[in-house]
Image (tube, rainbow, N blue to C red):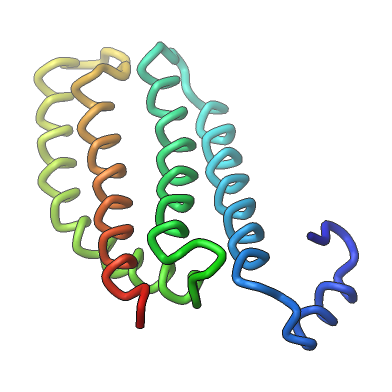
Length: 154
């Protein structure tokens, strides 16, 4: 694994010495660090964070990392083929399908906020606005893993 030596990495790619496991490690680190970075940035403007903000952030880090790992295993792990092509394409289509569920969930969340936090009250995170979205994210990865498993022998 290379962290700085781009020329050596390019040489491995050109020489076809860049295995499926190597591709997975780079994608895994990229996605994991991106998830962590986005969550760190989310905490910057939060005015009244509570335990549910922390639960949400931890879920937003762990679910994509675990989901990507299980998708890699569903593809056959180091013996699989074209994990990145399969993962990104299948995950994209599954995410588009899941957006259809996200729209009514978001409308319900706005209604919940209007009822629970009337007027100028600060909106604080609660189990009702954290858990459903974490379940949504987890099932997105479950379905992605299922579809990758369906094509792993292709």
